[in-house]
Length: 193
Length: 110
Image (tube, rainbow over all chains, first blue to last red):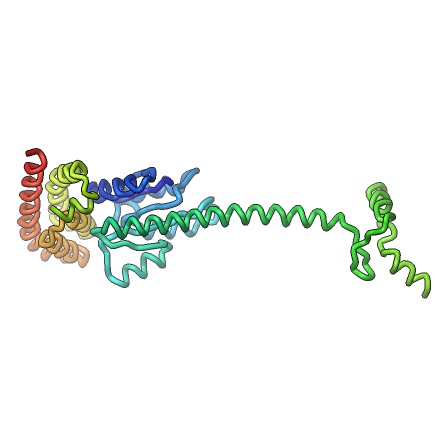
């Protein structure tokens, strides 16, 4: 999986990027907030990003707010803020800005590896969910189309199954007028009255 | 240096690379912080001190981290006079770190 690592400190960037590569992922790096946002806002954004809080141009929370605020964001990115800011108020602020997770610096290799794995699981589920949602939307659209073509008696709301229905459909298609909308039972009951 | 080696996943080649990066970056960062303090640019001084703090934290350099934190806090509060006072301590602690890094490089290449 492709993962963005953004940090303006060359040492932390190198250590994080190598940790991510060791986990078997493809790494894209950024050294300031502008570069990070360009990657995340591009045509094919990575599903996971490790963002430093304090970076030149845009900081981590600003990037999170920008991404979360975009209605046309094609794919949600799972964001882990990696920062030396360790107060509870900082964690709250970072998560409220839209980050999914928060790791304090200096990072622990085992901890960040587990959190990356967690993020990847989330990103995979998110992708599956989006794909399934698109499938369900398409199926619903097709079902609606079919429902419009299916015969239904306005009297008893039952689906018509009589053979004359198809004649009625053909006539409707030919002259645009509804013929014999009621089912044979309802027509019979009407005649008997 | 053990802490940095653990952070490098036990990879001594990677440790050597980050030691080289830090050796080059620390003097540059110090100069940038001093420039920002002299120019009374509190935000720039705070951000640069923050980055330097994060960098040396990777090597477990607790005293240097605290010294950088002091400059960062004073700069963030806009107290550039206090930041300037605390620069001397930060310079001294960063010199210690550079010395340790130099030993580590000698150790790796030996």
